[in-house]
Length: 126
Ligand SMILES: [Zn+2]
Image (cartoon, rainbow, N blue to C red; front, side):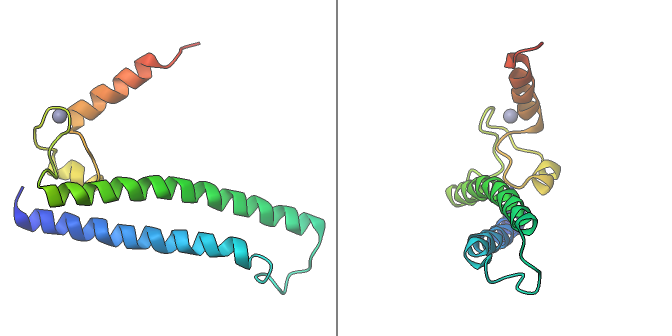
């Protein structure tokens, strides 16, 4: 991969990571601040239940984001190691168009499809 492309992907990944960590930070603070926020809204049990529900939803998102952040960190490490854009299965180049869509992709489209096909195959059918 050309250095120019590599730099672009590194910037992209770093930007996305910073955004993610900022969002995660907000989520972490949300739990602590939930008693001080919404000060204007009247307190009743329904209101409290709604807030708890919203918090659970946010925790769920944070979990996905944590996984995503991990994948991005891994991609950045791969850039450092000089193996970014190489398929972990066949060692061939991952399509640039694919990396643009999924900068932390580990496999070329063909191997990813094969993997997903296998996963589908393994899952029990009713
Ligand atoms: Zn491959």
